[in-house]
Image (cartoon, rainbow, N blue to C red; front, side, top):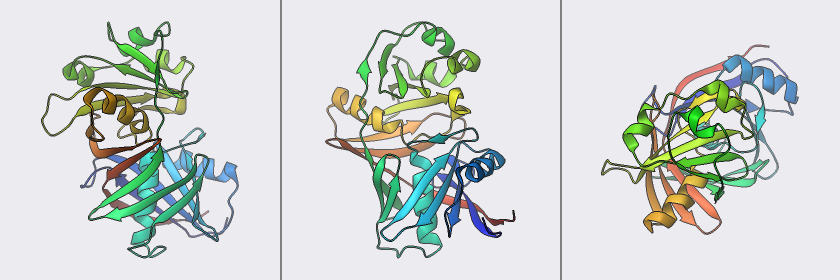
Length: 265
C-alpha cells in the first residue's frame, strides 16, 4: 500500500459523538492485501474496520474485526456510506452500491438518516446448547439459531440490561456470537437487545446492524409489524429503525465522524 491512505473513525447508529458503534473506514485507491487490512484492523482495535475501494460499478467493501474478516457488518457499512458522501466519492443523491461477501448491499440517504438494504437472516428455534444460558447468566430463555449467531429471547428488559456474561464460556460455543433480546418497556422502542461476540474478538458490540437482520423478522412476526424501533442497550447505546421487506431488511440510522487522518505505513 502507498502511504497517506485516508482513514476515518465514525460513530454509527447515533446522532451524537462518543455514542453508537465506532467503526474505522479506510479509503483505498488500489487493491490491498488481506494481511495488511487485518493488521490495520488490529491496530485500530475497534469492533470493525471497513476497507472501501472503487470499482467500475460501485465499491468493494470488506470488514475486519481485530482478529478476523467477517461476512456482514451493518454499522461499518453505514459508516462507509457516510464517509463516501462526506468525502465526495459519491454525490449526495447517489446510492452507494457495495460488493461484499454477502452480495450487493446498498445505502441511500433519507433526510438526515442513512438506509441500508441487507438480507434478512431469520432464526429457527433450537434446544439451548449446553452452557449457553449459564454463560449469559439467565435462568430461562427461548433459543434460536440463524446459522451464525444464537438468539436468546428473555422476558425482562431489566434483566437484559444487567447481564454480565462469562465471556470465556461464550467464546467456547460454536457460533460467531449471541444476541439477547427482550420486549421494550419504553414507549420509544419496540424491542431492546445486546450482542456478545467474544469468538470474533468483541466481548460486547455497542450496536450490531447484522443482528437486526435476525431481530427484525423475529419481532416483526411476534408484534405483527413491518417497521420496528430498535434500541441496543450497550454502555454506549444506539438505535435504528428496522423495516421488513420479504427476504430483505432495511436498517436506518445516523452517523457522526469523530476522527479523520491518514495511515503513514
